[in-house]
Length: 384
Image (cartoon, helix red, strand yellow):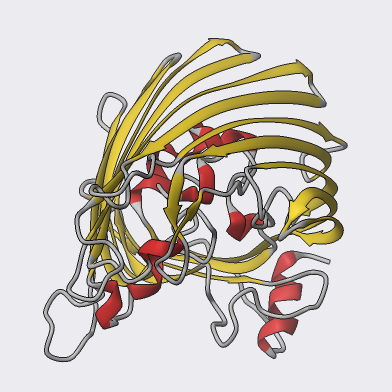
């Protein structure tokens, strides 16, 4: 059956008519796997995993030719749990993306809605997430694994000139009485020319503790950043530089800076920053098999400058192997190990030993109760 017929059934319409000037596409990814975690809140665990490589999703993408090189566009994308059939985010139907806008062949693209930040659009594909959610920086504190979407946002993306592409974005907090409450803003620039890749992005979300539509983006429930959930603001700078050494080999370097700013009610009394550095590489062994490896080191500031505690630090190594049966279907194997040092804040604001949490806890990872954690996952995906 053609996708247009599937779309017609999905929308409850009898017929979908195709026009040369406009189109609507149904697409998605279905991904399921199994995972072993050496330490998940104090014990080893074997578990079913929804989305071990790709987040499960289906979406509708549309365009209408308005003439003169101008087109109207939209994208609605839902995330779901293949193990339960539930939405990935309770109560949010199109949690992954929901936007509408205009695309011009002369001036670039302007979109409005719930959207990815420039980090995801411009540089994520060349950073630590090249080895999946397991490979990204601990807790994905710098949003290098597309964990953040910006609500009520306006985004402008330039055309690509001599390899350069830029983006700027602003997300309204819609928080009564506070202009900046829960708001966010971001910008980025990437350069892709021949074998060379480089790019940098900036992102900030404001006054999360006081609410607003982007409040949830500031920190997640993982043990890396749980103590900063009531910070006044979070800002990050990410940068990548890489080269395609040959058609089969890619090597890259990554840097990230993440800072949490104090509020009157936050657990921190001074700003706390984390610096992360890493190296990534992939090798296409044959048309069907690609392998990859990443290493990263994250070091933070002391959470209490007056105490005798030491600053939190994390070392992590991760690898992947993906075997493609076709352009749409493949099997994957991921493995990662992390060790934590020093002290940090827990979700109650207490100073505790830093705990390991391999990669992005939002992408199937879980919190360890100790200094070390190993994680292995296998699975398959199908794209449509």
